[in-house]
Image (cartoon, rainbow, N blue to C red):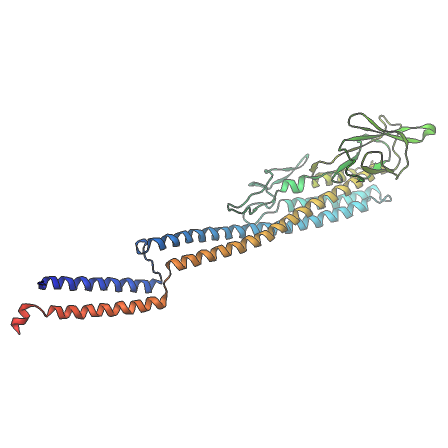
Length: 405
């Protein structure tokens, strides 16, 4: 077969250009450290690298949310710790106010201390998270969530919490309404109270559950009357009007166990001659206890110079009972926040592992093996040089060059 000079030239040039392109590609890969410069270099590898990059970006976003959540939960844990300390101090002040030898002036001094503690608690409840939000802002509010209104402290936000936009539930706030305003009233199971119209010196303690299975959850009323010789007697009826106990002899400080499953103690001397006679109630506990309202009730009694000993003791004991429930609410919330911090550590570790896996997958798909690449570049450089020398020799095969020689 005859091979023309033009065909030989064209073949040599094509080979030279191909070798030059291969050398240029290898040089570019060495410079960038990547074996995929554009998707067409390796469509399958490019797709794998793209998916890995997306997964890596999601993981890095999750880490930022984890950092924000950890900051909010750390601050919340500290704030709840401050609240526990303040409530414990308020409880100690209330215990001191229960001293029967205290004068009205001394009780007023205790009330001033409690008022200051209340203000500090309100500041803690409205603590910010450093990013313009509020730790106990629930589902979000632009201003302080707890407002000190005329009738007490109101919640200006919506209960619940804000979660970061990730697959994991990473809280960025805490449900302040539940923690500060919705503790269980009474002793957590039932609530004892003295009627506001009572005129005697009797007061009732928080009581306790003696048999959970026997407690019916009904409301009960204890009323007093004068028996034979003027001796005090009490009667108990339930919320259905049924008589539980009738004309039982009253003994101050002795536990009353007539109500099924519970026991409570009435101390002092209730009045049986008032209109109406003194009454006390037992009702199921409700999630409605506000630590601020509890302090306000105690302050009202301690600031009243006309309060009789029974009213003072009732106010003090009710305050102590409510402080215990507030402490329980804060401690439970603090434990929950602590558990969230532990969970954040676990989520962070898993996310770090996910990011590392994505980086590895991406690297395997697009990163260059430098040893192999240098060897390949050297081979392509040798091929290119050979092509150049071959072309130089082919140029000399012209008929005119032959005639000229």
